[in-house]
Length: 454
Image 1 (cartoon, rainbow, N blue to C red):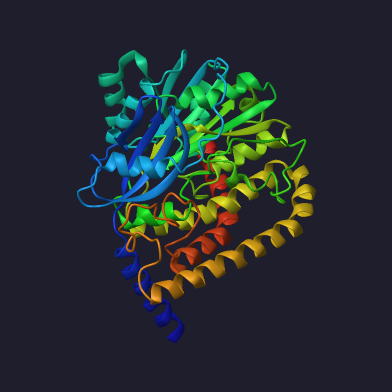
Image 2 (image 1 turned 180 degrees about the horizontal axis):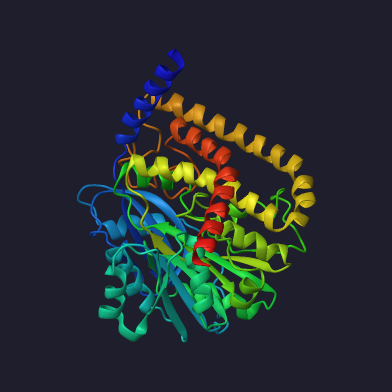
């Protein structure tokens, strides 16, 4: 009982600390030839004084993020442009090859308002030849169909998938598209106008490429949950393009290709259509909406890599994601991440048992790598706790009131200024323990649905 009481007290303390996290403005600033242009993030108000999470662009291309503080009465563009010029712009890339034909699949369920926002951004893409397919997954109402038919007409195709689960919905979209490349995104994103062109152009440049992923940044940082998630890396994978080639496994990924979470996320991914169909699409017993809780995107990445195809991470392919907003959302998300991770690994080994020896051979190196990372993170957490005991974190949002960049918070991905609550870490571990069971239960449920349909 004493242990339970201590855990509850710790969780109450963590929630109180969590609720003290203040909002952060989201904006983007382009350092183009015509001078700096500052715009608010999707759905955000004009930038004022205070803390700003800033995407920096050079001539339209995303090159980095920073967290800056705009003093009261100062010109936000002037202050943030001075900081943005410190972000390395890198070399100017040459012209991208003409992108192949593309089909965009958006799976949704009873979220018509969010879906409309996403579709508006997708219809504004500069890609020369693409189609959009909305997959209505196990709908309870006709709201999604009505929206698509009323507002979007022939510009968007509507299909229905009665079996619940994100993987089933994505497989339905995969079957419906007619294009050379199929891209997937979520109904809670706003796509940059060049997103689809940037995401699909690598398929033209590299005929061996099977998959591509892109950059995901927060559309809003208005709640403690959104700020906490982004200060721990969010969904972003950095601003350096990278190709993962199974013929030349990366030295810094000892579990490759099983560390699929490093490659990207399902809200911003594309596959060569024929390659994804050849490997059987996504495992329908994985993904949100099933008892497995997630892992469908990771499953797709590994299946494609295991077939010998490359994967390209392309940070110039940008979507803005509306992160979840509450503590309860984070609890659900943490558990689901853990469950999805081990569920997808179970799915891979069930569907491709020949990969088991390769997985086992990589486990020792992977464990050593994980222990090293854990030691670094623990040291960082102790330092953060010590700093917090003496006042606001140096350079953190509560401390900085100057014009310099505020380091170690959203913008410095994975810097962990705000400690990750132990409650959420425990939930993620519980999810990992549950994942294989959830996957097997999801497979059993699908067999039941199949028998009833037959």
